[in-house]
Amino acid sequence: FSISVKTGDKILLIPLTDIAYFEADDKYVYLVTVEGQKYLTTYTLSTLAEKLPDTFARVSRSVILNTHRIRAIQKHFDGKFIITLSDKKASRLTTGSSYTDRVRQLLEI
Image (cartoon, rainbow, N blue to C red; front, side):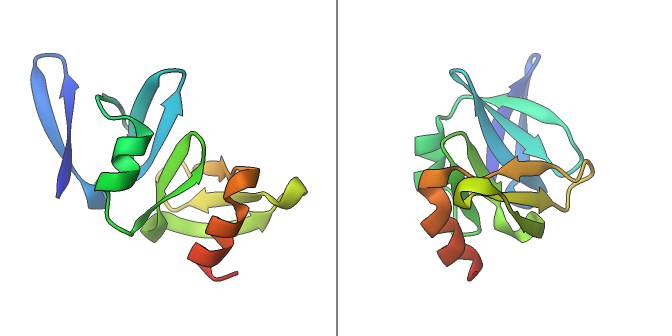
């Protein structure tokens, strides 16, 4: 399974295993690869949350991450967590407070 993204006049198919996370910024959703490339997608996070397999989890209003890419989890204030990914940039993503229970359940912590 892969996600299609447009870049110039080409359409690339990005395998799910190459995706570190999806991030919403304003009304755009970006796909970020393990190598650190960022592509604009045509999907909403809600659509992605429905379509993606269980290896992807929504951890905040603006982020869906690939759970196979989690390297470390650190407690943050207000019950939030900072998740460090095993991508090239060692991306650090903060979970949303309304997603705390989901994250705890998902990561069995």
